[in-house]
Amino acid sequence: MKLKSVFTMGCALVFALGVEARKPNVVVIFTDDQGSIDVNAYGAKDLVTPAMDSLCRDGVRFTQFYAAAAVCSPSRAALLTGRVPVRAGVPGNVSSHPGGRGALPAEQVTMAEMFKAAGYATAHIGKWHLGFTPPTMPNGQGFDYSFGHMGGCIDNYSHFFYWVPPNRHDLYQNGKEIWRTGEYFPTLMVDEAAKFMEANREKPFFMYWAINLPHYPLQGTEKWRRRYAHIKDEKRRMYAAFISSMDEAIGDLLEEIDALGLRDDTIVVFQSDHGHSVESRTFGGGGDSGPYRGAKFSLFEGGIRVPAMISWPGRIPAGEVRGQFAVSVDWLPTLAEYAGVPLPKRKIDGKSLAGIIKAEDARSPHGEFHWMSTGSNPQWAVREGDWKLIGNPRDPTAESPLGKDDKLFLVNLSLDVGEQKNLRYTHPDKLKRLKSIHDRWAAELRGTK
Image (cartoon, rainbow, N blue to C red; front, side, top):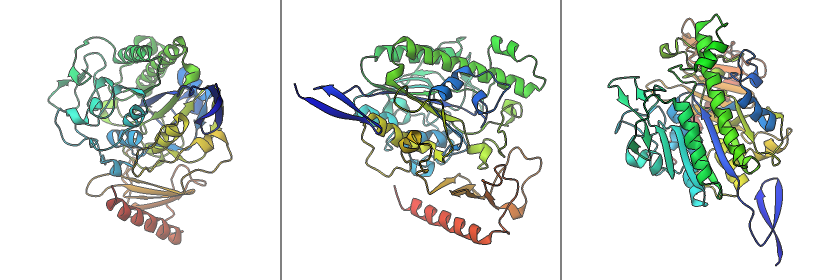
């Protein structure tokens, strides 16, 4: 039998005797409303997060990683399609009720569809919030198996959606409502993930593990409520207990991967969907954006700069940090490159991060990047190098609203990562340049599909 070489990833050649090497499993862990620094490894020394820290220790941690949107649905659409939210057809949050408005259009191509076409078993576990009709629920978007809630949030014990009336039970398995009343949803997610991985251990699998924590309601377990009883700030105390409850579930998931003997064959990606919430339902916010301004709903750094890491033992560096600019849309082409899976034949906004994961001195693949929200006076932002321009900025953490002079907010992040000083009047040429870049991008976006 002739020895042949098989290219399995961007940085290695694997040799096999007449048989192509197994493609790696892929697990994407996507948390919900987690603050920019709310991992011990990112600076939150008051939090106990050994599982998330282990992914940093065993892989590459990013310090300048961004969500493609500052709110749930568009951020999820961007992750799954590799496209900015407007191009993905989800510029804002979609309905949490069956048949409600908005959805990730069925004609979009998701990570699940990409991997499924390459022979992967695919699963969605956890939160969806991208459509509530059969064509737009997970099984209609490339997932062989789906378990979780379709709307934006649920009570973790009753599995009811309470955000706006009518109150409604929201727990589904492969598109059919099921009842598991009284069972803690994070534990259910681990159990369902373990069953899926066990059933598919002999073939490559892709699992989108969209954990719904630490999104409200803040329902940490008794173990962690006791652990944080010393924290005087009630908001932080409740949030911390929920973060560590989430971390424990992530640790349980990683232990399941280890127990199946699959860790070396599995790429694990971790990211928060955007910054922490300061909404009344989360008691005004117990999350922490660290040195960054803003939170969820804001295009200031605290709304879009998020913790993110990737682990693949023996195949990518371990215990290293990358400071290059990167975005959630980059995971799709990165994972496609590592797995040797063809990209969808359409415009992709993401760029592979394999180069910067391999080498700390590699340049960011993005010369510029853009964000755009919805509404009559939508926020937008453009980033070029260290310069960032925000249009119609919003800061939900501010005690007073921004003034009319701040409708265009220009910063140099290398000098002012906290975005405290608006440079629009001291650097008019830079403002003009970034505004023209944004206008050109917006015009191009309107003309493409």
